Length: 279
Image 1 (cartoon, helix red, strand yellow):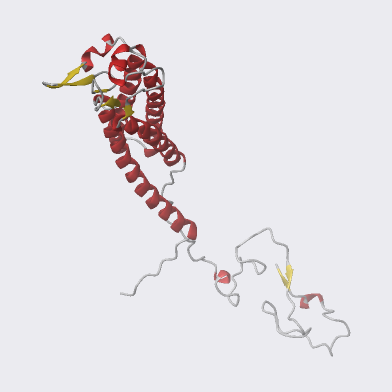
Image 2 (tube, rainbow, N blue to C red; image 1 turned 180 degrees about the vertical axis):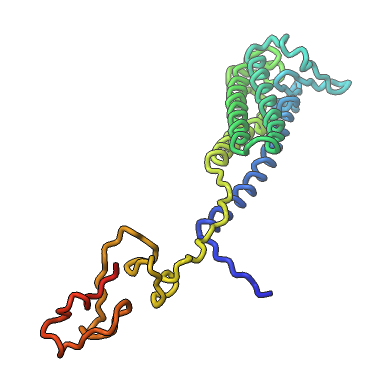
């Protein structure tokens, strides 16, 4: 059996390539979404936001918990289920918003299951709005947290700390991780919106027209009675077409008998029966 050669339109190739690239970018987006969820969860539960481990009263402070280094070891106070009892109002607000960011990030991962039952554009839109919500909550939480540095418990560790002034304390890795999470959530949200609005499905395979039944479309030397000489398709609305051989006035017509020579008649085709018309 001979090989079959198929001709593919350039737009078909472009659509196929774009769809494959979109799937690859979607996989990377899903991986970084899981990484973002891990980042916000770690930043939420760890007390490594600010701290001073070399001062007179070394310790570390987080959103809803703080740890102090004593002779007997490190002692931490604060429980997640009791965060509502936090006396430091800015810390309480930051805890609530970072907690909402964590919930939104986890819901985004759960929403990925919808890829198996819903259209991908709809799922990307849902995830994009959840990630945008998570980004906003992360920004509010990170911006509110420094407003609580004037609290007495914070000053015990950080010395002369005040609003947005951390005194002897320093920014620790959890706060930096939360700041990176803000930018990460925003980028992932924008990417999800792009994947949702610019998602291209594979185009259907091109169907080429089959060969016509009229011989005139394949070879002008074979024209049926119902075919048109002026065009390749049958048309009943075409006007009669005068057929004249180029460069000669006296020759054989494709649709008439031999014409009378010019020497026999004084005028060109003087007899009405010798007019070459296609009716």
